[in-house]
Structure formats: structure tokens, C-alpha cells
Image (cartoon, rainbow, N blue to C red; front, side, top):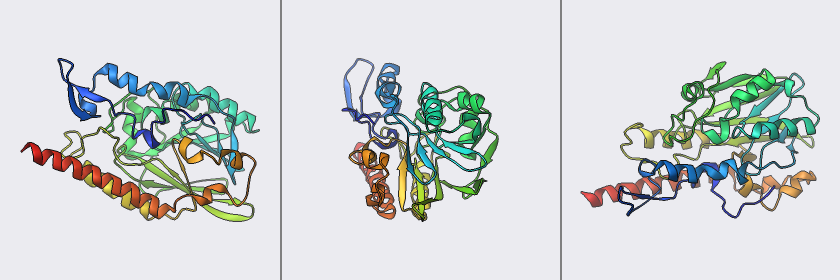
Length: 313
């Protein structure tokens, strides 16, 4: 996997750090307010997802029945079963060929992908859903709060960014709902904030004779640059995001995998490719601590915004 010199941060969080400008081009001194960015600034900030972050890489088995079939820094995970397979996230549109080549290189058939899932409705994770649905004949399952966005082809999250080809949703999911296929069960945990239906997927897999609890994490709270307090489109955004962190904190995880894996895989990818055991991802920061840190970071953002607002009054 190639490591970019311009790493945008996990889960699109740091993609919008451009200083917003006013109409006469003067810098407002407010980093990253998405509603203050010009169209040109948004295009520039999103370019890396269509270039170096979506470059093809060789697929590999991560552990158990979980395989990496994504790109350089945009994940797509294949979860196999005797009765068909799950695919979590399809990346940007250009990644569909990469995913197809990767699935087949691992010895699997695209037609055996039965269910397409998503971490959340942002273009860098679901822009390939419509093409992948046609390519495989799979059904698209998504958390109910993100379903309208997928079917509209529009980013209806606080990010409000690039869209995608609309895709029909076959099943709208609720918090805690499970999906079973060939003895493999995935559980959807609702964690709104990053998008209204942001979903953390959990499952058990057997690796080297041991049961391992795996979580697919894609819900790091609202993107940098999103107005948190009294957001006109999402008035309960702060409360929603805090609920999301607390809901994820209830999960048990031995290993967690992210939507932008470049940083988590750095230094250990070769060890994973050669199937080193104990698994190198078992050395991650414990899940409970990781989520607590993410929640604390978000709370600091809220406090900083609150102080900024108070200073203006």
C-alpha cells in the first residue's frame, strides 16, 4: 500500500482545512468552515480521493474470512461465506474495477457477492454502489437514516459534498439489526454524526482456531469544518454525535478496521500480508480507549466552537 505524503486523516476528517475566504478574497481566519468554502475550494479538497488515495493495491487476507479489496487509502472489505459474500464500501466510482480485479485475484467470483453494505453515505465510500450492484446483482442494505441519500445520489450529511449515481436500497436497517449469510452474522451499530446513518459493523471471525471480534469503524463524528452548535440543517448534531460515540463504546472489539486504512496499516501491512501471528492489529489501542479518545476530541471541538461563539457576543 502506498503512503501519501498528504495524508488527509482518518475518515475524511481532515479533508477540509482550507481557510475560508470572503467575497473580496480576504482570509476570514476561520479554518475549514464548509459553508464558507467556494466550489473551487471544495473540488481541490476532494481531489486526493480521486487520485492517490484511490490508487490500486494488491488485495490480501486480513484475518479469518475478511479480505482487503480496496485502494491505497480508501477501504473496501470482502467478507466471505459458503453461501455468498458481503462487501463493505465501494469507494469512489473509479474503484469498481480495482475491487473487481481484487476479488477475482483472491479466487472469488463477483457474482457471489450477495450483500453490499456501507459505513456511511459519503462519496468516497459509496460512489461505486450503483455500478457494483449492477455488476454483481447484489442487494444494497443500509441504515435507514442514510438510505434516502443513497437513493437520491446526494450527500445529505453535515458534510454536504460530492454526490454519486443513485442506487436503489433493498433493505433499510435499524440500530442493532443483524444480517446473516452462510453462518456469518454482521451487526449494525448506529453512530450518527459523520452522516445521519453512519454505521459501525461488528462480527466474529475465526482465525488460527481462535474467535476474534472485529469491528469496521467509519463514524468519527462530524467532519472538520462542520458547524456543530445550532447547525441549521442538523440542530441536534452535537447530541447525535455524542450518542454515536456512546453507542459504539458498548461494542466489544479485539481488532478494528477503518475506512481509510493507510495510517492504521502503516508499518504492519507486510506482516498482515504474510499472515504473521499473533495478528499485528491486536496491538492496536484498545477499542474502548480509542472511542473514548475520539469522543474527547469531539467534545474539545464543541467547547472551542462554544467559546468562539461566546467571544462574539
